[in-house]
Length: 125
Image (cartoon, rainbow, N blue to C red; front, side):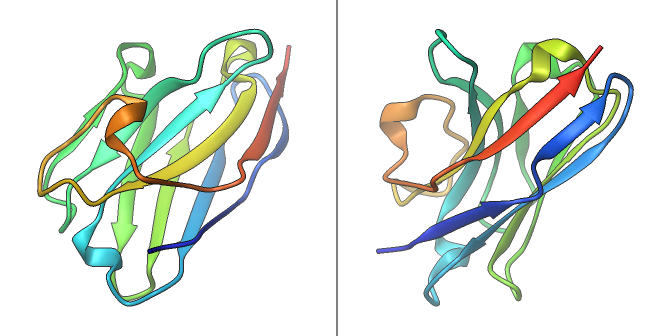
């Protein structure tokens, strides 16, 4: 089992940047596929980005359009999401998630087994 704690959210103006972090407990972090999801008020939780075990594979939601980068540091048990050129529509609670389903990239909520509590990102216009 793994526990996930996100940080790095906050208030930023449109066009600005934020870097989210997610620290995982336990020694098996490198065995989990990791991802970021987000949920805006009144909307479904949606996929943002995923990264494979060793970080060699990544996949992004269509709306990212090159603005976000997902990375991981297995030595530090940490997942990152660098977000640039933020837009007001990026406002949401951002969650990190871990999957122990295998060495692939997963994009649906059902494929993730562990979730953090979320960090709020607010982008003002």
